[in-house]
Amino acid sequence: EVQLVESGGGLVQPGGSLRLSCAASGFSLNYYAMSWVRQAPGEGLEWISMRSIGESSYADAVKGRFTISVDNMKNTLYLQMSTLKPEDTAVYYCVKHIEAGPLGVMDYWGKGTLVTVSS
Image (tube, rainbow, N blue to C red; front, side):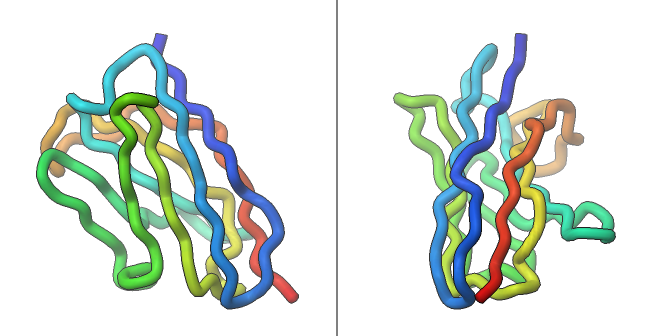
């Protein structure tokens, strides 16, 4: 059974940093693309980063501030977030794609972790 469990969210001041984790089970991160998607209060879903075979990509809103990575030994996906802004406040979801490449649709979602950026 595929499971994705996010952790690491919380309250952080503007300019601060957080690292989100997504523990995956039921499949190997080696073989599938993974994304982080967020939803701000009252807003729709926003894709922010993907790691596929051989490459990582980012939305313009987070480029240069966020870094996606994988620990294959722990089968865990990470999102290192730096220079956080109030507009980064959102629930962050870890999402699995159906294939390793960057064009596959998303098929499994975690329950999300809340990040609040506020002074």
